[in-house]
Length: 365
Ligand SMILES: Cc1cc2nc3c(=O)[nH]c(=O)nc-3n(C[C@H](O)[C@H](O)[C@H](O)COP(=O)(O)OP(=O)(O)OC[C@H]3O[C@@H](n4cnc5c(N)ncnc54)[C@H](O)[C@@H]3O)c2cc1C
Image (cartoon, rainbow, N blue to C red; front, top):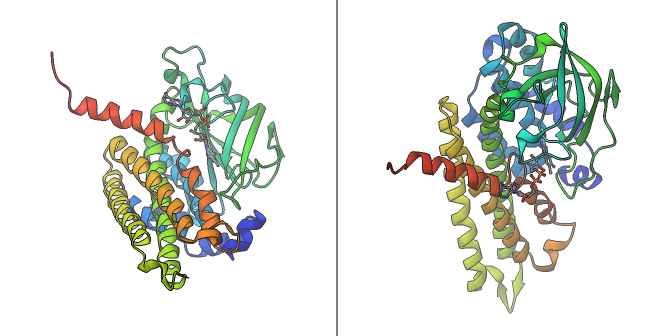
């Protein structure tokens, strides 16, 4: 089913209904708000299994979980009461919007602004690459409430924007046609164009100027999720390769009996195991409520690079058939590169990791 929907780039409505019935949208929502109250480690393991089937399913959950996390950590009681019960059932689903056409890695250079006007903020600006941008009823929006702040992060805030799911035009929000992508099909990625869109001031998360710090806290959850997706995708690629290697014959024997194929399988299996362990370590640390930028950054960097290598090797093991749309490897090969980019590129992870390492091993004098 995933294969057909993926090739048609079709939203998996039925599967999402099943995910709702299973309670997946409420996995980390506290029980008092109708969720299962489980931790990030459980969420990571769910992410692995979903991505082993189809990575896009985990993408449908990821921004939702980041929004749940931000509400739990930084939301007021009134905000939690208002949104969490409907988020727990999946009736209300969330997107998280930081990136813009001119600002991705350099988050502080965003231009989208929210000007206070009485009991409202007036939002203007264009957002880019919003996963779940069309179907979300709630968008966690990173914007500037004080564009002149120096340094810029002091003028950044998070607003919860409520909109009509599925509508391309809604009270000053326009959603152009979905962005066409190489992979990561099924789940929509959109622009969001804001023109004088009014958001109640009560929808501000915490206080003005706290948005950058809040989003950096939330992005650690996103990085653990992307690492989990990488482990799931790589697991599937490895399973496909090890099966195919024993079925396909060349030079009178299964290719699995040729040493160079065995070397590939050994490397793939070892990298996969290392990635799985790094994921578990990062997920446990973040679950414990401790700052985890080093562990989440390392897991995101290592797991996604390992996934990319494993998927490429799995394609080679399949020979020409790996290039055919008949086998799932072709889909995994198109999905894997996104993981190197989303929630911060590998280059950005390396900067985060080095900064943390230098802080922890500071030489005085
Ligand atoms: C399918 C998809 C879904 C996405 N979903 C979301 C979403 O839901 N919400 C959201 O907010 N964003 C989303 N994004 C955006 C994503 O987070 C950004 O694409 C990513 O952060 C990189 O930003 P950029 O594309 O602007 O690249 P740039 O920042 O322009 O980077 C271009 C290149 O320069 C490198 N680079 C940049 N700065 C440095 C530096 N200081 N040192 C070394 N190298 C550097 C980068 O690593 C990269 O290789 C999504 C992107 C994609 C492709």
